[in-house]
Image (cartoon, rainbow, N blue to C red; front, side):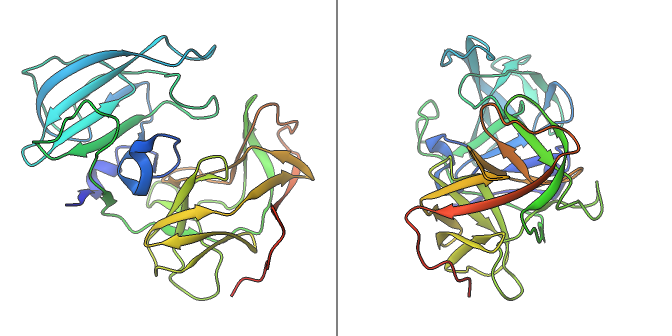
Length: 285
């Protein structure tokens, strides 16, 4: 069973990702992270609230001490939502778009990750409290692939991330876009995930290529829509960084580079290169 998130639901959020997370729940795209435009969480599902639970979060200086779990019976499945301080309680009925509560900056995710809703689904007879065991998730939108040559200027940033102006969104607000799988031919799809700082990534849409490539460099092997990254080092102007955050965006876009203490400022020109460790055949078919 695959749970498909509708276009109308997705358009409540400015960004989504199925693979850009270290959680086991995201393995093979079995969860989706949804990024709202505000500090409140509009519900991505309709149904009855079954339970809410407060859990201890990993201690991080930038994060709250606790996170929260919300379970919602959608009829065919049980939706499992994290990173929201619930404004609902068991027995409440919610519709898509209803306010579930305030977003929580949890210690479960890295300092460069914005607040978001983590959403997964279980069959009704599967334990909904466990971190693993969710159903595969798909999206009912065509994500437009954007070619990127690894260059751009910094347009925004913080202590642990910068965003480049390239590749730019061709029609902000009208569709979701992502960085293209850089292989020859049409239908290459869009890369999703943390390259290479999370264990794997995804290939959304397009043909099921056997390889993943970015900015002219072979970066991984695909199995269906799941990508196993090569052993890689990402460099910005020759300096190693943690990696590239790959996602699907509806509004502003541009490559997002992440890492502790990135020494780049707004206006700086950046050349991103990817080094394979150990070196291999870099040719892209």
